[in-house]
Image 1 (cartoon, rainbow, N blue to C red):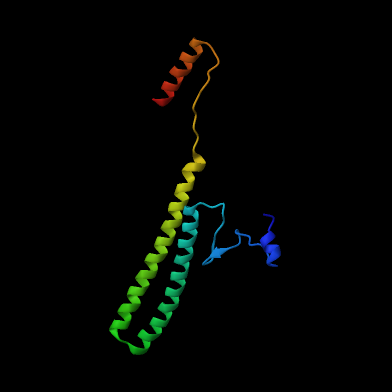
Image 2 (image 1 turned 180 degrees about the vertical axis):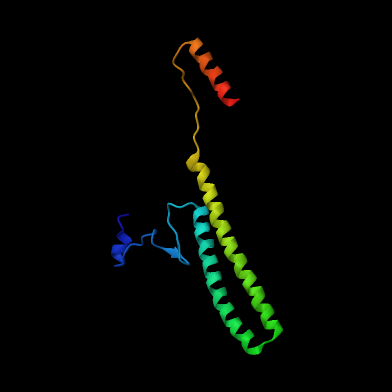
Length: 132
């Protein structure tokens, strides 16, 4: 198409690798799972940041009012933020675990031994001794 539409409308063509949804990089090369991971990770960051801001404000309210319910809300919010942080770390660890087996995977389909039958039998005997 040679960007005829962009030229006709006097617009710059869109580079889809630069578009991001809620600060998550979206590229055509990534799988849906990678895009979902980036989106979820960005959401975790946003929730944690806003929760931290809310916690600071709620601490001010609790100090000013000295009301037990306000301190209970602060406590609940703190636990929620800790859980969100744990979930973020767990999500990252799970993604890393999924990548590791793919990188470490070594498959041997065929083996070729060049030598005599006697040499092969001696090799197998030596391997058995090593296993014991």
